[in-house]
Structure formats: structure tokens, C-alpha cells
Amino acid sequence: MIRTGLVALWLLALVTAVGSLFWYQDWVYQRPTPVPDMYSPVQTGSVIDVPPLVAVQPDKPVFFHFFNPDCPCSRFNRPHFQALVKQFGGQVNFAVVVMSTRTYSAEQIQQKLGLAIPILTDSSLASSCGVYATPQAVLLDARHRLYYRGNYNRSRYCTDEQTSYAKQALTGLLTRSGRVTDERALTAYGCSLPFCKIDND
Image (tube, rainbow, N blue to C red; front, side, top):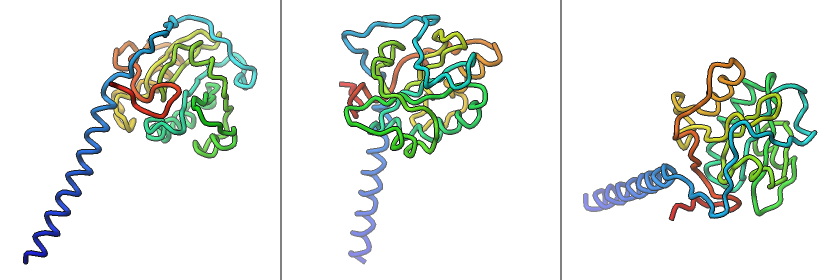
């Protein structure tokens, strides 16, 4: 009887610890990523240089996925990004911009994401697009003007369809139905560049 009680207490403590860890991580994610001291905002409508590798479909919009393989938020976002490529790949040029202090080959990134799309390692694209966290979505119109830079979703696991911001931006551009203006979409959340951490201290 005593042994059963101790096992039950141990299991309760374990469940509580795991639940607290998930709650803490989610709470940390809800806090905006600090804006770097030297950050220079990039205005909507700014023309962004697009590498030739990306313009597979000429005269179509471009979607940059800023991705750090070592960032937990980027890993949680993977199924959501895959779904966007599957849904909009025929209408938009997708490319991944790898933001990491570690070196990865294009094949490694394609394997991690399960997608055969262009992989870029030019970190200067982040400053060109005004990106300072991962994961971040950048959508350019067919003339390579910045249309959207922001989050994929308000939920850490990208499960809230109501706040599927990147999808809303893609739909808005393709159907000309309007821009995403929600402040939560335009304020960066996630891992600071270029390190694998959520630095909100």
C-alpha cells in the first residue's frame, strides 16, 4: 500500500515537472524576441534582391523561409511550412534561408524539411528583409517588393488556424484580398539570430 502511494506520488511529480516545462517553454515563446541594437527596419514595398536560384517560376511571388535547424521553434514549424509549400508551391517560388552558426549542406536541410526546394545560406538576406529571429516568413510580390515579413502563427506549434499569418499573407497576395495587419503577426517571436536559443532576458 505504501509502495503504491510512493509510485503514485512519483508519477504525479513527474507529470507536474513535464507539464511545468511545457508551460514555461510556451510562456517564453509568447514573449517577443528582443530587437537587436543595430537593427534597421525594412519597410513594406522595399525591393529585395532575389538570388537567381530562387526565381524558378519567373514573374511569380517569392517566399523565403528563415530557418535555423537548431531552433526548437523552427522544428515545431516544419509541418506547417511543408503544408504551405504543398498548397502554394504551384503559384509561389519557395526557398529556405538557413540561419545557423553551424554548417549544413543543402541536401541536409532538404532532408530535414522533406522538401526539394532551393536552400540558401546567405545570411545577408536576413538584414535585407529585416529578419532577426527564426522561424520567420518573408513574402515578396512578383516584382520582388516586400509584401509580408512576420510570423507563421501565434501558436508555438502553428496549430491555430485563426492566426495562420503566413498562410493569410499568401492568400491575401494571390487573391488581392488585403494584407495581414495583426501586430502579433508582425512582431518577431522565436529564436534570436544566429544562435539556437530563445533569448528573452
